[in-house]
Length: 510
Ligand code: BG6
Image 1 (cartoon, rainbow, N blue to C red):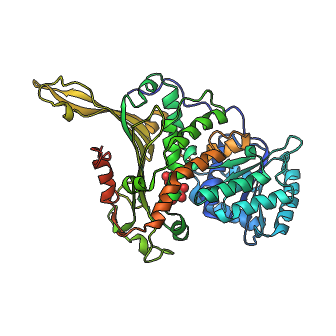
Image 2 (spheres, rainbow, N blue to C red):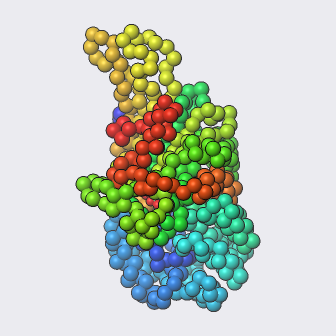
Image 3 (cartoon, rainbow, N blue to C red):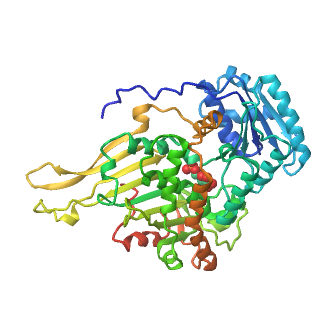
């Protein structure tokens, strides 16, 4: 294939609004690994306002100077490409730190004073973007306290927005409770519930691929598609997050958020426009169409697993139960496979199989659209059931691209058919620059575009579909954990789930 005619996408025409970004929980991993590198990339691309400042708000006393020193060390390690010294010194002049306990009202009074001073210094026009990068137990508390001291009030053209990290609740009830609590203090328009999967270029590209090309939409339905498979496989274990993971597990950690985003973008109807609510309305309809399974269906259509020890990339790795901060008798799942049914006209009887797991054989995320078989036997030596079906694979990570499999005649005197692939690779075509995936989301927060953030109803619809599974799994603890070796593709039962339907997961080698 030849390179595209058009130059790489033109940058957005305006920089983010002047603002102060307050990172609550700035001492944690997210700031150094993602947020700060993303801010540097935005500044480098000219998308950060010159009237920008950042305040780290976290437990633990530290001076502005100490915080700046710490970030100076960290950016060297975590920047996606080296940060120019002039750019970094520009940043350092606008970074501040405030130590405080999130439960202590006086910390928020100190924050209010600090914001006034920083605003005066950097002319940020009263706009503040709060980023809650704390543990989920603090989300409600912080918003309540900010509200109590008037720090969420929008007036005289100034805006106040709050970005909330995941996990958003641990089940349907707690997600509803958190939404209700946020709404007591904020308008829905001020709330930006983040899912970093929506920051990925290839995830956004699902919309472009489907709705900017005339040829796919007519066949994107039950008449032509047999089923859809979505895999989000990781080779990492729980790393240092054993404490968090023991409480959440793979289902809560990945399904109602990342995996359901991929399902909804794949399955949604064309929106009437690309306005935030038009897109989110269509996504929400898909989430509402996921049939919450009955207890019997849960037993038939959901598989859970936990990794035992094994070998990944030639290195021996421990079992989940031997990870730090994990109980040696833990029943927390590190793998999930589900068969989803979407109750609408487009997708009736088209199963969506989704799976995710830690310590799997290979790291990759992809959506495979499996088309129906050609109807007729035209080829004497190839019975119709041996004809390979067409399959479109959207590769989200790490090797981003799209490929289409179709049958072609194998050269020679006989009529033999082989499967060939037409392949598009993102990096070959667009020479994309490395990014953290947070750039677009932070920028959107600064210009007030909520399209790629989750609305309350979307989140609740996701939890509604997952809640029956949580209930049955809680009532029937697993008996066979650990049930897959690290370095495999999950438990045998996950393969059976598809085999029972006469299908199989797309093999690792294609
Ligand atoms: C996070 C989960 O939201 O997403 C992690 O909490 C997971 O457990 C991560 O590893 C995966 O994100 P990515 O971008 O590496 O696929």
